Length: 631
Image (cartoon, rainbow, N blue to C red; front, side):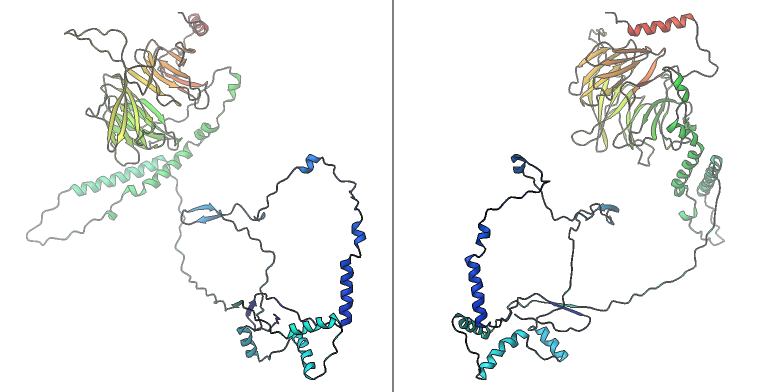
């Protein structure tokens, strides 16, 4: 159908979908029609047939690559995608819900190369007629309509053109007949309308207020000023408590009673409101005080080590002490597996005749002058362990045979879980506790070993500790008979144990008799193997964290031995000239370990033993390391 453009009003955008159009073709004269037909016939007969019938010669460029038949048949697959190569792939947007930046997964791949908004509409549409009426424009015929109407007017006047003879006249009549036929209107009249509105004006409102008053304050804070502030605050609280405990005066019958204003909490100073700020300030002061020690802890290297063969040096750094923990011995120490600057200390007494109280302290390297947490205990602490996944839970073993769990998140000073005689406590001191993986019901559990010969598993079920005996240690040899002839049962005394890092059910137990038992959680009445390790009590046993077959032991017989759990004889033996209290593998190397002895360190002014006898003894110890053990 014919289309035409109608002028539009300003600030309006009107567009119409494209519509197919038909052109009016004027009839050609008969001579032109005949000539055109002859040209078409000549084309159909194939005037250039000789050109296409000749054989074609294959022309190759001189620099064409020569390929084999297999290379020509090789297929190369190319996958074409509709993704925009210039679209960014690392867009992130801030999520106010999760309060974090999140990557945008859906990236728009559409690329617009050309965009044009049309403002044409169909002339027969209602919108076009209304627009022509508003503008006062009359309908005008298009050139094609005028050309089609011209022959009809000539026929009406009685002056028709002479028809051409032959096929040319018939073709002209057919063309004339098609022109006179009425054209069908477009049944799919699409239209698009658009309008523009005025933008709302922007309005800005501002107000100016007086700025709040400011004052610059600066002061120095050191340990004695902090102490004086605490002492002054404590004095105020004691005065307030004395006033509250004082009896109220009696009312006089003759004088009316006076009303007393109630005291509110806001009137009394509460130091707990500034506890967190004071703690941060205290850490800052300590870090400034011990800055040199902190730098040595991270980056210290002794240049003189290059001139020593195998002897190294130990540099003491921090010294942790607590006023309330005086006259108590350090019996246990454990680092937090999650917070690398936090460690727990157990305090008690190794004087088993005079046993008293104990303490549990937690220190941080950020504040060496005061513990982060402090708990008083009725019995001395002999061992402790910090949970790996829940570092706020600390398992503790006491001298009286009890075990307990302290929760550092709780504000209470007493343990959250404690064993008792009813719940299966040990009858002798607990020498070691160790957290284990959660059981099948996702309950927390840990193990303990004691001098009563029991290895016990403790499980936290609801609000109580449930115990289960894993194995009972027994001493070799006949213990004899009682007064009535009944045989007596001799139990072994467990001193230490350690679980295998890769095999969950396998663990080692050291005893006071100097033996090391290889045990399994599945068997409670027998040992998998027994090693005659030492002549005195086994103070510690540790699996190697890297090699699954090697473990190390230390004893009061002055020796440290390295074993392979499939061989009954030790692989290495080290004599340290004093009772060895503990030994541990290095976390970064499979061949490095550290041990502590009971003789401590050399004091200033202490004379070391010298002479030929000492040197002979040293050589004998070296020879004993390379000699084969006597059968």
